Amino acid sequence: MDAIASAIGYAWLLEHMGTDKYTPGRVGQVNAQTAFALEHFKVDAPQLVTDVRSRVDDLVENMPSLNREQTLLEACQSIARTRRPAPLLDESRKPIGLISGAGLFATMADALSSTSVLALAKEFDRPAESAVDTNTIVLQGEEYIRDVMNQVLRSDQDEFIVVDEDGHYSGLCRKSYLLSPQRRKVVLVDHNELEQAVPGLEEAEVVEVLDHHRLSSMPTAVPIRFHIEPVGSCSTLVTERALEEEAKFPEGIAGLLLSGILSDTLIFRSPTATERDRYAAMKLAVMAKLAGPREGEAKVLASINEYGQKLLASGAGLGMRPVEEIVNSDIKYYESNGAKVGIAQVEVANLSELAPRLNAIRVALEDMVKTQNLALALLMVTDVVLGNSRLVAVGQGRIIATLPYARLDDDTLDAPGIMSRKKQLLPTVLAVLSQSV
Image (cartoon, rainbow, N blue to C red; front, side):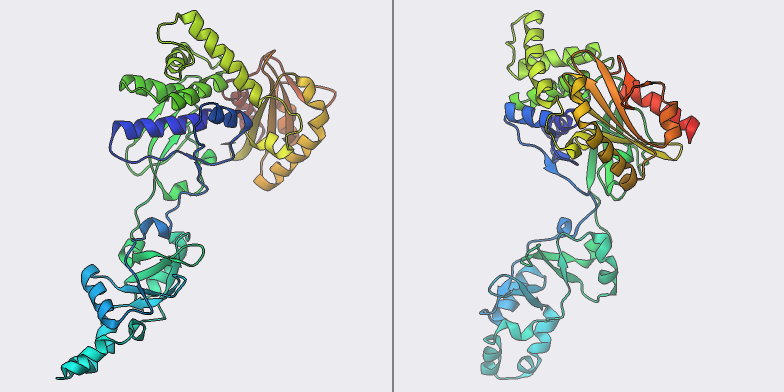
């Protein structure tokens, strides 16, 4: 919830403050709690971003094309206007080939050397298809530039036709652009670890990081704005930046940012919660019109609590949720001392919900250990009413045995008073890894 809210809110704020275009993105599916907040405040989910490596589509230019009915004269006119080759398309807008200036001259060489105006006129009236080079390399727009580089380097072409996934013409791409592509620019919010980031980040350009988690190593080519603060929610940092700029969020975005704070701090009950989170939430509640601007603090907090209870309830519980959703909807990966761990968290109203789903959860975690090559996979089941957690742990036995939590009869680990993955559980797990691996 906090990651989605921060992405939407910060993209809006950065665009509001400057002239560049920012687009919020997500790297996974929207969980139940986030879906509730998005629907409640009538905001669309960010687009799914599966990879940020540069694609051919990033460099395509929508240049005019020709069809089979057009003539050599029209091909000459098109090339003269654009100073670029002219793609020839069939009836379904799929490319036949490319007509270049050199190809036109070669086709019309005899007529151009003739003194007969009539011969030249007849030549101009011939179909443009007579000058097309059908051996032109065609690139798929969805292809990664890295994957087509060898093909581009071996080719004598200076221009390439680009098509979409259905094979329809998208535009032209210059060879020079493909050989030195501009990397995609990325702002990271609510995380700063490569293991948690969008795939392909090593080929993109990270221009800014805004986060409230532990510091990890993220090499950059040039200095960037890197802002990490010990608060309960990244949405708090987004809000504070807006307040500094005297910017007021639209009602829906303010509501999402409030949701991010309430979710990450469990309505201020988590040990990660700070006064800064409460202050930001108060401001956002007014912007989101959950409370009036002249209402007293007690009424604003009551409105926040009322909405917060609905928000937490929307994502709490195991019920009949698919087990894959339970272990994957809120999971983060960490690496320490050469060992990789995955820690997921799910909230329930009562820990008794765990027993009927325990075996299936263990199977899903075991599969995660194998497919992700993890030393440890943990599901932290948190009772948001009593403020306790139960841990389902799968992985290397010596690591699990070293965790300082009592083992119960069902082989789960009892973690009373533990509510925060970031502040309470993660430091303990990382300390154990440093001793056990």
